[in-house]
Length: 219
Image (cartoon, rainbow, N blue to C red; front, side):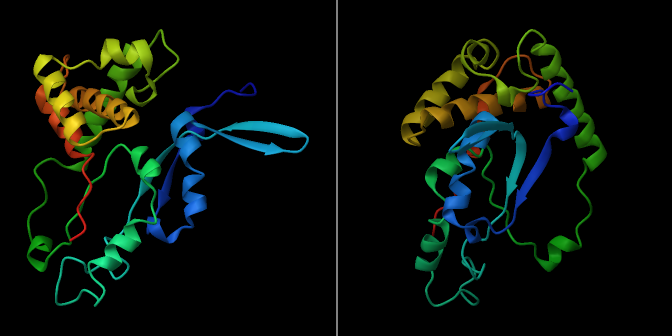
């Protein structure tokens, strides 16, 4: 492999558990790599850029004790403790994370329920197919997935139908989406459409992508 080339075998997953427990300066240093897929190191006599394209997954509790939604277990500082805890993660970093998903705690009854109708193997097959579709779509571009497209390619391949455009325009104003968030919603919408084997991005795909931009309110 020539210098500067990145093999898929060298791409990995960066998992950050308890995200707010990391120093804020450390977390904010991830903003450039998440945006460009590269990290630059500057020294007095050299400036070196390394490939750093990763799939970042982060997890966090709503507050330090983790019991914000349970009045019987939550600490005496709730909900202020949650606001302080979540504020450790900056808005610009959150803006660079495509999917924000709140996961409710499992109850004892949940643990006894049967497995989902669609198992991991079926999901993996859909993902593999969607990745293949994206790879074939961008044969003539310097991109392999929807996450890497910008500019004309984004406009060409990730423009929703009229109903989807109207919904996205309304949501962009109501949710005060930044330009970066707007672009990421389009990319996620394209991926959702690919997973559904849909040629055109529709309102339903945009609506699902928008639902992943919501952040759980502190209450």
